[in-house]
Length: 289
Image (cartoon, rainbow, N blue to C red):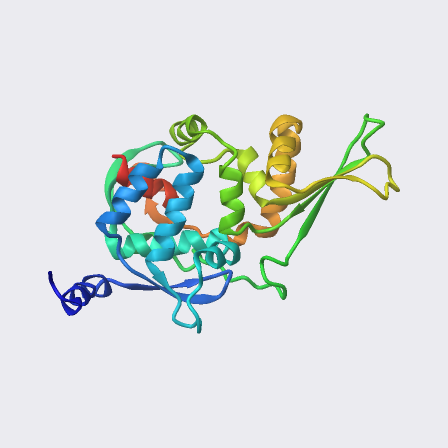
């Protein structure tokens, strides 16, 4: 059997293609390494369950990232409970950059005239000056709560509903994905080019829902578990109601979402438009193409 030195020598293969990124919400540097064959098998086998898929993606990111500015290495539980889901997207970009450097040929469609053409989209080309916004609040993203109040009319037993929202951690996202089926995940991906729908997205960013029965209600009904929050949103709230809550949430937080995009000028109508990239969808398309 080869000695330890021989195996350690092979580790240098990953270090050659490392990429430094900056996590915008936890404000920490990270060094990403390229994916290995074991990561490929883990991701492909995890698609049988949405929460298992997301958990394995998070483990894959954890195993291929190091934080040089942290004194002690984070445990996996510390990583998912203290890292925002937004930071996870940036880390995923870094890992894909380290591994492939390109998304390959993509079909580009002009948003103005629907002109279609193919072009190679590199990982470097989808980072623009405004792609990443740093967290600029005094509190950490975990401690920052944003209350959204919705007045209820024409119902005597409900005066208002208050959503306590914030930017989710990786663990928060995992909690919600555990509530949806594999069939639903595949349906979302095929229909909407996304792993989640608005109800799951709203549940992910909602830390609790308080239902006040009267104007001066001192003991509102509070739904604070991921399961209860998702059930209230999915089963009881009207679409326009949820859209209004999401609109208010996005006004407060959308600037922090990474904007992975490659700008184009249409050759037919001469309009400027962007080809937007969802990093998770890009990863799935690679593995299941």
